[in-house]
Length: 163
Image 1 (tube, rainbow, N blue to C red):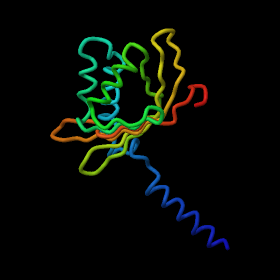
Image 2 (image 1 turned 90 degrees about the vertical axis):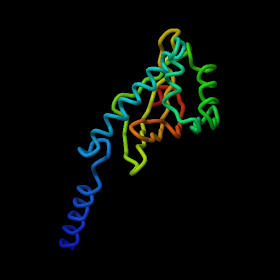
Image 3 (image 1 turned 135 degrees about the vertical axis):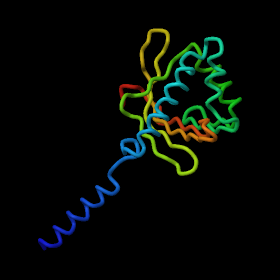
Image 4 (image 1 turned 60 degrees about the vertical axis):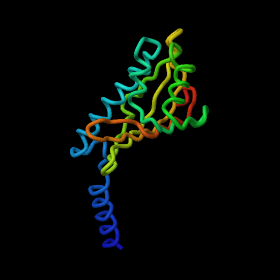
């Protein structure tokens, strides 16, 4: 019995060592994490200021023309043009997005780019209250040094107090 327990502990320890390091913290993925974190900051800085001249176009430039955007409450858009029209109508001048500190995780996609996951809050410009929160998954593609979003999922929308 003791030998079995020792073997199980050893197997668990080996599994933890081999598979336990998340991509967002593994040293070989630190550069990718930093790149995607900077992209997240940039795309949502433009989103947060999209009522200002040029910012909505800047925001749009981070998305592939055929981006698929899945929103649990709003449905699906199949193109950048439709997604940006929705942003113009429903977001600009109304609220901003904040990344929940410590929630961003980044995973490489070999030969393609990266998966970004995390949680974000939405804050009303009138009054500044951050009342909504949701989870997200975004697929970034890198081609010839240019990064763009090809798929976006925003889901689990809830009051921020339910986090």
